[in-house]
Length: 320
Image 1 (cartoon, rainbow, N blue to C red):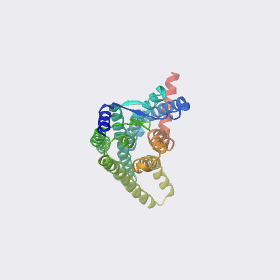
Image 2: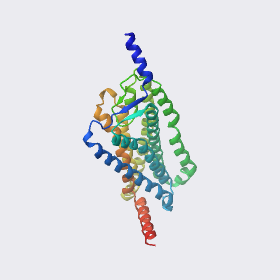
Image 3: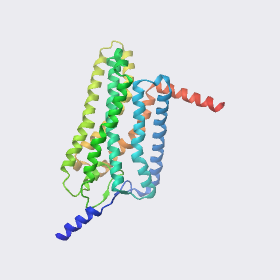
Image 4: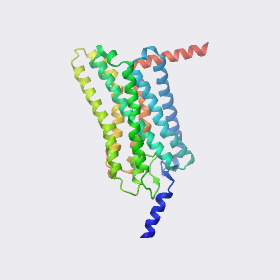
């Protein structure tokens, strides 16, 4: 018994790395998945990069809505850069070894950017609420100072909480096994490997979920409830459809992101299968960031016009 305890203690102090299992259970498709994820990553960088450029350069897009969209696109680039390059390296090398420090850094940034996205989506919903429900005071309420404050609060608010949460998780003893059945260092999977009581860490996780996912989601629901109530008062069907078209893209993104994130982090870990544990994070870390630029561009006439102008300028510049 004493030898077992000593061995556990030794393992908990000498464990210096984890192994990300990733997609190693499908060795035949490693290079195929590498190509797919590389294409997805390049697409996300290009599409979001184009949105950032046109919202900066086009005079018609210098409004609060596109200021938030500009920040959202930059956030998406940061978000996928934390996860996809690491996946590509693991698929290429067929090794998933990751140091505790690198694992902690990845988990910390995933949680920071995920929380920031929740808060930024809330700020975007508030912007749409003011634009539709208080159009006459829109410029006064959503002035540049307010927009900067909302964006700064979205980026900064999560940092202290997430750093503390990450520190508490990686302060736990890990006495083996060290294999994470995932492609990223996600909170639930890392916590499972701890060999001490994780009750307080789980409480901390649920508290973070409530503060950074559920509360912002409720604020978004309230904003859209007031928007719908305001739209119902409009007598013109054309006016309703035009007003709602400015919200539809944001609403689709909210449903996709919050739906997958809520299921992932609120579902009891004992009820979550291994396949589902990988699929849901893959959905909101890779697939949704790929769809977001498409959703915002395909359903937005202003951005489509700005893209046409940019293409025309590029063609004229090439011809000269």
